Image (cartoon, rainbow, N blue to C red; front, side):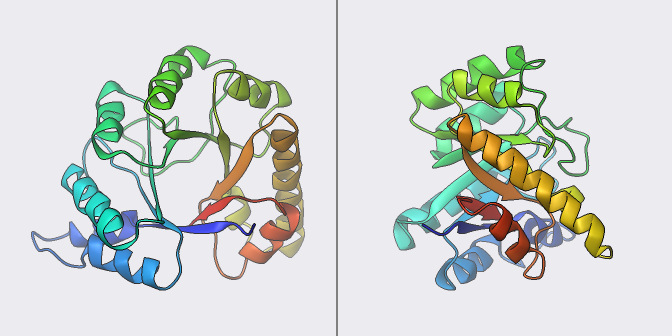
Length: 222
């Protein structure tokens, strides 16, 4: 089964928030992406609401329920109590946990799962008890032990952080090395019983090499 494309709407929300106006519309552009064949939408409601606002979540949930019932809703964020409550209120198909400090501009590193298990075990169980699929954001050099630990606490998927791969756009040889690391991590994740997503700085140009390196890729977020 080919990977689904989950359209990341955060940048649309960031543009909207420059002024106190309702456009560009997060919901309408989500609708355009879904009509064009995207399999879902992704949002990251940060505590400061600098792009996706908490009020967007209900609007997007309604869009999916009313017009695209087969599409998936992926909410990503740091597993604080407030974030977990947002997930419980808006029932995403998937929750992707990221280790971001709230002040970060964007996600730029993955979990050190074994070292940070105390920050993950209870949130993962809480989300799983609600019936949500749980993914963890990981780096391409994530250890096999970390991947096995993720599986042991109930995680369903990992999302490969592809930012460093995207940064190799001007160096074909460096890109080959970066995509090979992603392929190796994906293979080890699958061996541990995890499915594999990928996201950050992926484009029409660099996605084919990633799909070739990770043939069982489940989802990409762009």
